Image (cartoon, rainbow, N blue to C red):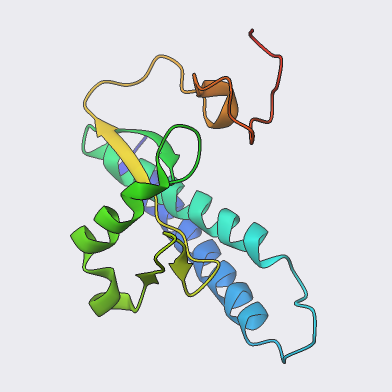
Length: 147
């Protein structure tokens, strides 16, 4: 990919992220008792996917490759790691993100996640339940597949 193409793509992604941020804000300012126009969880996931795509492109230009995004509490990534991530990022002081005694984030609908980064390009990257070896997970989407 040529530099000009990469810069154009990055500009397009930034514009789409700004539009999505506006949609998130509009849904967050709904009056009490009203339903938001869009599902906030789906909007957040879409936002995270787009941010990850922008990060992927920038890192690949630098010779690094992303691994899948994982959040504490999914698959075999213990929810107990939530506190360590928040402390490492100084999240309470920097962005007002805190955690309850039960490891839940406050404000609600907040997300923490980690993304691996390596110098070798993965031959095939399977994300989500399909790529997880924890077959006894009660949240597994593909129950019975590959067993």
